Length: 228
Ligand code: ADP
Image (cartoon, rainbow, N blue to C red):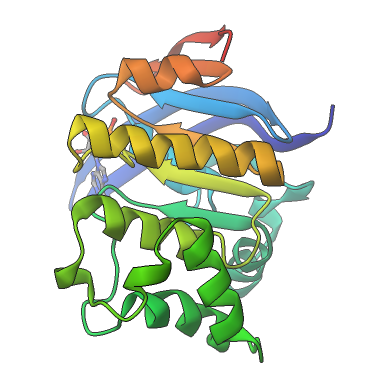
């Protein structure tokens, strides 16, 4: 199996003023292509920080991260952005849609920015895939939380990512809506082979993934294979 993510002795320290806080200590693990993987642990244990580092949104202080075979430590910011554009999708707990754009525009604009001449057509297709064909001209404020998260999912899939990072994707949704979003995530994993890395406090969701990484105080407590 090919490793899509390769993390070795990772460490991260935040500094504010004269204070330093080390939030990740000596983290090492690999993720295989197509795997579904969750990161769980108490609040403040470093889950979001770890996810951001894996996705190339921030830089580690020590250790190395290779994404799709490229060591991110060797890249400058532009090159990291390029690698992200090529391979990475990201969704957030609070959806992060642009409020002044319709659902269609939220998905099409990033495609247009990448120079995609068929952005509208592709955005319509993606919104259809997440079951929102009848909502494409709605603004985020006119959509339910579940619908907004599905728009975010369509947007995250616009570059056909090899790996999707999701930070508490069901955190702002009621149980039933959350379940539908999760079903969709796993459907996309099956259909497109997209690797899923999910930070969650929802142990039921974590149990649906093939592996669970438990963090505490910025250290790995357990790296468990589950049935998935
Ligand atoms: P989790 O996602 O498990 O709740 P986080 O990764 O968000 O944990 O945070 C881990 C620790 O790092 C917390 O103590 C948090 O306050 C601190 N932290 C997170 N981001 C920053 C930052 N940008 N600057 C300083 N400290 C931060």
